[in-house]
Amino acid sequence: MTNTQPHILSVSLPQNAHRWAEEFASQQDNPQKGKQVYLNTLAVYAVHTYLKWLNVETALNQGDSWHRGLRAIFDVADLVLPGVGKLECRPVLPGEAAIVLPPSMTQDRIGYVGVQFSQQLDYVELLGFLPAREMTESPAILQIAQLQSFDPLFEIIHRRSLLINLHQWVTGIFQPDWQPPELVFANNFRSRNTMTRPSTNSMSRVKLINLKSQVLLLVELTPTDSEVFDIRLRVYPGNDSIHLPLDLQLIILDEAGNTSMEAQARSADDWMQIEFSCQHEEKFSVKIVLGETSVIEEFVV
Image (cartoon, rainbow, N blue to C red):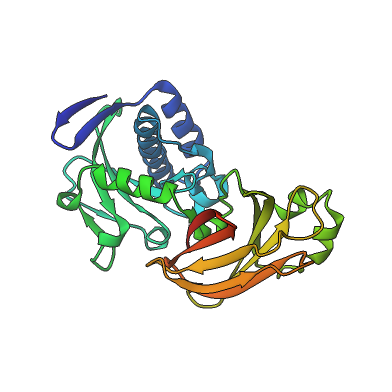
């Protein structure tokens, strides 16, 4: 992997990349679709290789491009970055000056990478990255000249690695320290019985919070018919305790760090709760305070 010119990176395509591409292409109904899948697979694999070289975690087999049914129906070239989002890795053929992005693939992407192929398909050049927020043309046409260096991508990865991305929960991507409630509460009969039954389209996860006394933070996310998400937060006692620590505080901070809602545990409380709604891409923080000790968890919807 070498720099061939400013902001352009050359990435070799090993035989196993071609084996994946050949296998996926052979599953398609016609040669044209097979060629599309072949190039998409190599593009995704090349970006995966580059990020892996930089120790950026990827989940190659979690993307739609690695899903047999979805790649057969759609023009997909996505790469999942756990805890961050999806990159769209679009093939660029010799002589092309723009990429037409498939309409169904312009949602839920953190950005786009242009992947230029050599004639022999033995290597590709990563032409650059464009954050999704900077896509302004409609229909979605990405001009090669718009592509930037990969620095904005690394900034997004760093920033989002510090946030719990709740919108990813909708697609089944969860951070390892956020566990299913049924698993966490399996041996805690009292907490299990105080849990509300979530609606069918809700996603719930629980994290152990270490203060002077351990507590469990449950976050339940429910999409609505609009770009609004209903959020329920509950705090339960940990360490097999029966009640929450007296005066434990649950505080919701807005993006500017101002307190918007709060609750405080009273004597013999075995849980406490706050409910509110957020729009897509809205940020908020949850602060749990016990005495002089506090923990803050930052979220983006």
